[in-house]
Length: 179
Ligand code: HEC
Ligand code: HEC
Ligand code: HEC
Ligand code: HEC
Ligand code: HEC
Image 1 (cartoon, rainbow, N blue to C red):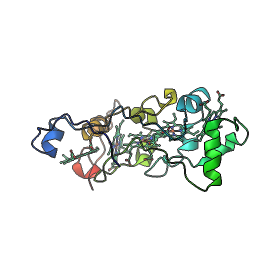
Image 2 (image 1 turned 90 degrees about the vertical axis):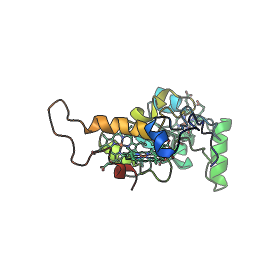
Image 3 (image 1 turned 120 degrees about the vertical axis):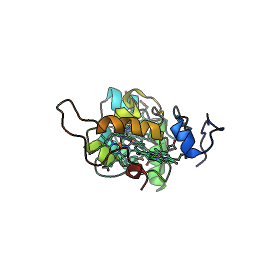
Image 4 (image 1 turned 45 degrees about the vertical axis):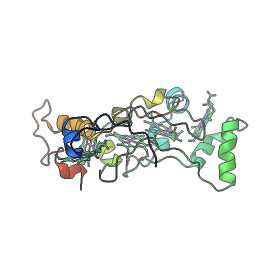
């Protein structure tokens, strides 16, 4: 997929040097238009629909996932079914075609990331995705760079206030994220 990656460090000697210098390229702020004008501010904000009602993969699998059109129709069979944006969902279902949502967040293939590990450790969606419930259109809020991952992992590896020892395998080992 072709994506805008504003490089701030073309002159860095190599990838590792760039990483150490803390000047990785990032897609922070990326907010592509979507085929249907779906709003998190309306659904997750005003209506307070739970994130995992739609992103039900997050608890048990690597990917949070994007809900299939059928989930939308649980409500939109009745609600606003004459709205032009809802008509697009109905057409996609009738044509047996998936809605072509544009992916916002991604890490490169050489990085291992898993939602279920984080959700299971009670890391909130908002710690990584920001205030999605107030977004009309989803924006990549965090840089998703290696330095960003490691900052939180380092903090999570330190003993907590009770003095409990840090976990045995350091969360900052290269092999944690690069298998
Ligand atoms: C009613 C269903 C629904 C609910 C509830 C919902 N979402 Fe979504 N979410 C979607 C759909 C559809 C998309 C894809 C279109 C888009 O990006 O807006 C999406 C996209 C996203 C994305 C971007 C995915 C990508 O391509 O990188 C994130 C992050 C996200 N949601 C987080 C959340 C969080 C956090 C909550 C709760 C505060 C939430 N969502 C609640 C339906 C939902
Ligand atoms: C739990 C019920 C529910 C689900 C699930 C749901 N919606 Fe909605 N949606 C509503 C309601 C209620 C409104 C009307 C909100 C209003 O009038 O303020 C609405 C409004 C809309 C609108 C009209 C424009 C707007 O933002 O107000 C669009 C477009 C829309 N929804 C798309 C979707 C899509 C796409 C999905 C699936 C990813 C979805 N909805 C899932 C209940 C739902
Ligand atoms: C520790 C950080 C972190 C947390 C917590 C987190 N995400 Fe993500 N999310 C990411 C990253 C990184 C990606 C890109 C993953 C990839 O490329 O495989 C992503 C991708 C997504 C996507 C795009 C589709 C997918 O599954 O890859 C959705 C939707 C999403 N997240 C929703 C959520 C929701 C909802 C929650 C809370 C239940 C959540 N995320 C919690 C970091 C996080
Ligand atoms: C906001 C904090 C936070 C951010 C940001 C974060 N993580 Fe984590 N991550 C955690 C915590 C906490 C754990 C430990 C979970 C546990 O011990 O059960 C963890 C665990 C993991 C694990 C499993 C480690 C193991 O050996 O059990 C992987 C892999 C991982 N994270 C990858 C990533 C990647 C890749 C990123 C960046 C794209 C990232 N994380 C960003 C908090 C975070
Ligand atoms: C907590 C997760 C995590 C840990 C631990 C981690 N990395 Fe990374 N690494 C990432 C992520 C995420 C990226 C992709 C960043 C991006 O695309 O902006 C990355 C990218 C890289 C790249 C490619 C840089 C580029 O510009 O493409 C190299 C090389 C790398 N890491 C080496 C290492 C080494 C060496 C270690 C151990 C000292 C390490 N990583 C530890 C998450 C991690």
